Length: 54
Image 1: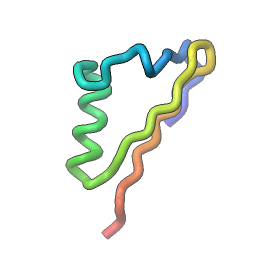
Image 2: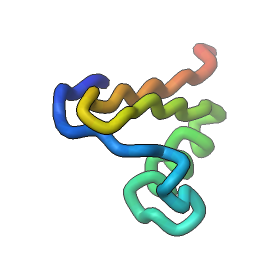
Image 3: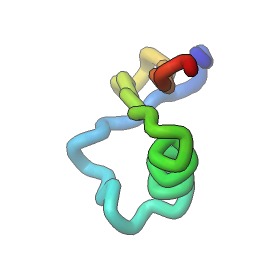
Image 4: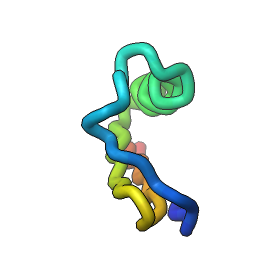
């Protein structure tokens, strides 16, 4: 999923306590997947979820 919003500096976000990011990581973990977040101020955000197919 990609948006063209304002983006954010991922290094300034505590991924351990940000409920939105924690929730995405937890949901991906439940399906044995991973989440990758690519974001930069002024450049939007891309969230990629990768999971195995059975």
